[in-house]
Image 1 (cartoon, rainbow, N blue to C red):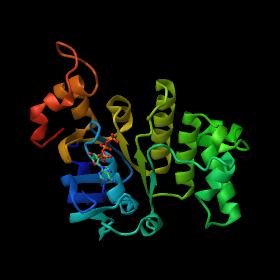
Image 2 (image 1 turned 90 degrees about the vertical axis):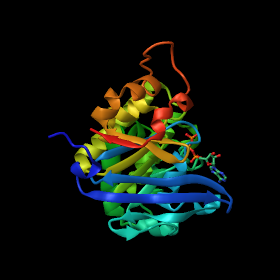
Image 3 (image 1 turned 60 degrees about the vertical axis):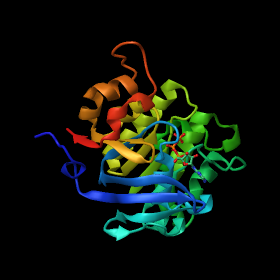
Length: 274
Ligand SMILES: Nc1ncnc2c1ncn2[C@@H]1O[C@H](COP(=O)(O)OP(=O)(O)OP(=O)(O)O)[C@@H](O)[C@H]1O
């Protein structure tokens, strides 16, 4: 039987329940977002600019705080514990690690020094083994290990940011728009590596992306956000076959070319499909 709900894919590792997020006490950005992330799978959070995808990730990782935002209602259950509004250092220790948009790396450190930052509190022998693991997934990083990160290309810096997050041995890896500003072939390579890491190590991934085509090529389940709400959700198979997703997200035009996503009123009704 085909799965129809995230819980059919596996136990739920993270459950976001009806959260509302407000920035600077006045700007309401999330208006009741609910989603479930099944353990050991890749979940995609898709949607247009300004829909609230990054805000959702920040609410999960605790990074709303420096941005002056707050979860004002709802809950974020991680392994049954409500982590909403907990400080980020507390959340990292629980095994949730975010790779922020814009792949922030320490430009004045080498590639290997950057990777070691991700494992700052662990014993050197263990870190060596983990570095070898990361270099196996990202052979480019192995070749560049003594290069200053500031001299690496955008794609290499994105790989480095993901590699550094993996050094922290996350149970849940949050990726914010890894395709941003990268050439299509590189984007493909990065998503294939993420899929390989998920398959071989069982790391659960929640990836925010505007590039629905590439995200859905690796995700097992997907959510589409619009204006601070989840507008549609379903398995990869459902989303890839949904005529509106095809037309407005995957660029397979039915007629008259592509329209703005805002024109798709039907997305406002939340649905769940196979
Ligand atoms: N620190 C902030 N203070 C006030 N408003 C903010 C802040 N950060 C984001 N916003 C607003 O919240 C809304 C959602 O932003 P968010 O970055 O979550 O969207 P997104 O879906 O990730 O968009 P994109 O794909 O462009 O990154 C936007 O209107 C944005 O301007």
